[in-house]
Image (tube, rainbow, N blue to C red):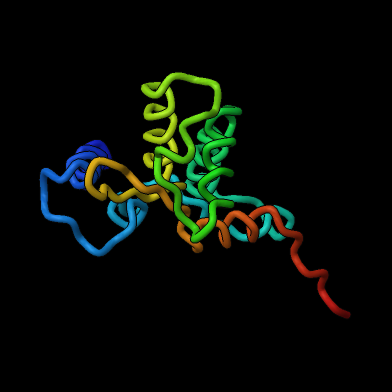
Length: 142
């Protein structure tokens, strides 16, 4: 399945043009999506595909506005945030939308339209995978 087609499907899904499915944005993107999925960096060298997916995640988080938006969503009460609650980050609303789109495309955020607002959430599996990636492997006993 072509990832470019999947991104358009997610955009259509988010804006209500196709029936919504009970699935996260990252699962709709499929296996080519840059979702963190790797063992701790100290455990073994990353494979080329793991490095590509991980680099895409870090690239998405490498912008201060995107990192702040990700943090606002991740730390928001209830685990999700309305775009209306996280828009005040010092840039215009279209720029906020652009950055949120980049975070969705990287598989870091999922979104759902409710009426006129879009709600964002960080899937718990994404945070767990990020923690695992940056964690330290257990030393071998012996």
